[in-house]
Length: 148
Image (tube, rainbow, N blue to C red):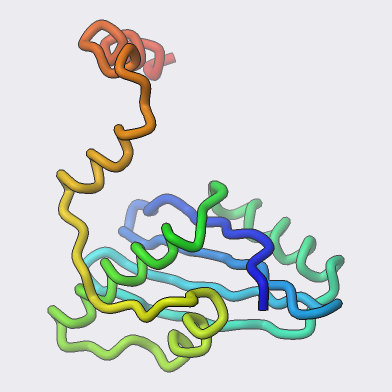
């Protein structure tokens, strides 16, 4: 199975985040979905198999109507799963059974619970931002523009 696209949402007001992965299997497609929630961990995971391009486009259109999605990567999905599995472990709550099928389809590597610190996340996000956009003046300008 080959990954065709990965769409993730930001966290909503309740701390929930969704991931949708389009998979190519021969001429047919599949849609894999993951739902995680801050403080609770992996809440749901499923795959819909044997879908046509038209069915995938319709499902993704409906999904994008309800969430503000962004293009993501398999590595981002792996980091999300690892971080939220740490929540499951902390709560002593097993993840849903569908997670095994989801991971077999979208991750070529084994994923273990691994919490990402805020500092590590910020550093990773800033790594691709040019230094001139990180200056005090640039940050102040960006904040001022965001109020519009």
